[in-house]
Image 1 (cartoon, rainbow, N blue to C red):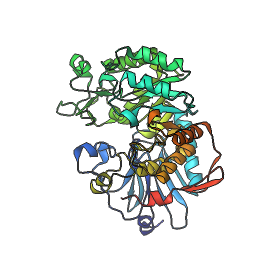
Image 2: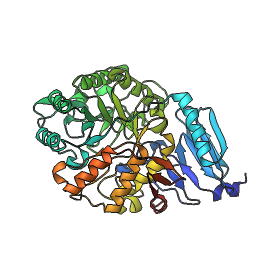
Image 3: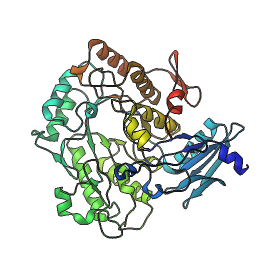
Image 4: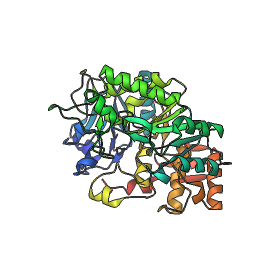
Length: 455
């Protein structure tokens, strides 16, 4: 294949972690990442922020002029594929999978090769109600009790408490707004016949936490000995050096304690923080360190606890986690143009990019449950129009992972009925081409959404 032909073809850019944009990059588009430090950290693998050429974690693909797809993918961790004038160039100590052919065939074959290497865990957890998009982190015990009363009669299988219950990140104990404690809350949820779910960011440590005060050596540090900044969401926030035996022991103890309190669906967030550049106690690949830490979590909670990975490196999560967020947060907005277009940050919340990146990872659905985030049915406190909400609900049906965050008291009678029907019905889904699907007797085309997104 000639270099000129390679330059003309679109490139499949595979983002490093859940929120990083994954889509077919149009030819000759400039490589841009955010200039704002807090946004840069979550836009791609930080080790590749200043790369000269577009690239992706673990794999990349080119669309050839004859319609075929050329795919190059690693069968090991800590690998990167760049789109250069000389074609697809892989970096990392890996055995490479290479295939040219129809798009569906090459991605399916690569998924099968990954399954042989890393294994697979699939099986939908059921319908999830999550507190995030109603309360964000302003949640309390009374509010969740009211939700449990309000969703009576709706076919939810899981009620998951999101961020806001903890004392601090790293201090994974109930705060004053949950005076009866997490065990009581888990019992109340289970008394309704549902599974109790909980959010936490197991690798994130706040500088003012009791855990950091007691165990400062567990934190990952840079070459100058300063703590590595893992996030700015509560921040700045630190992360564990997951290769340290004491950090692994602490992690296992905390995860075991959480599940012993009665939570058997865990949404684990900001997981990329265990694979950031830093001076690790044990020199190993960053993704390998993350995978080994994830295995510590799996062994601590047992095989029967459903683990949903969010903000997570994609391929290193396969075979350990049951579910995986495969796009950024949906949010109550379609597109935050100030962020996506002016700051060049498509890892932030918004329905359009959640759809785009989720569809870009649809091919991994046989390896791990793919979570497209929640569907909205409320009109109150929501800036999505009816068509946009329908597209997000269609995405959930395509992925086979249904979650919702609407407060029951916000729903109008017809909205509650549509939510109930959405949760109860499992449609017949078939993929017609890259962005077109058949859902029962309807055809849904996501291509106009994907093609409208900025590069």
